[in-house]
Length: 133
View 1 (cartoon, rainbow, N blue to C red):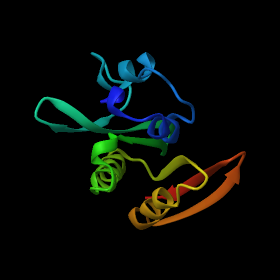
View 2 (tube, one colour; view 1 turned 180 degrees about the vertical axis):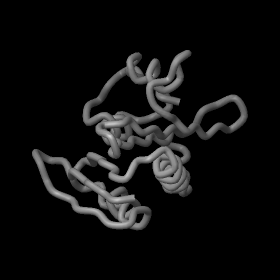
View 3 (cartoon, rainbow, N blue to C red; view 1 turned 90 degrees about the horizontal axis):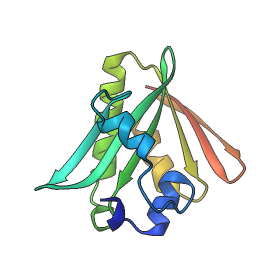
View 4 (cartoon, rainbow, N blue to C red; view 1 turned 45 degrees about the vertical axis):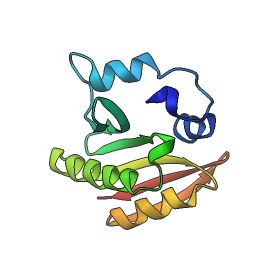
């Protein structure tokens, strides 16, 4: 999946044009002892989207989503976000954090629709979101 993502998509997710999926992240979400939950969308044997959340405090977590370029704008990211929020809520997460590149207003709008309430601030070219779920 990662190889099928454009540089722009990778920058949107990782804030840099990383050339390979970070091994630490893979170990944390799909290793033998996952450190945090991940939701995967497959088409046959191919992964086309991935979402995960990572605990950052007793009731808070950071969320991240990556959707392969060919499958963007098909509401897969939105569906993954909603499913991830539902999973996190059931696990005891009450506050969700997300960092989004400035200018990616569609991501901010999607988050706003999926949470109970949220605040957003700007910090060095990114939108920092804190949401109650």
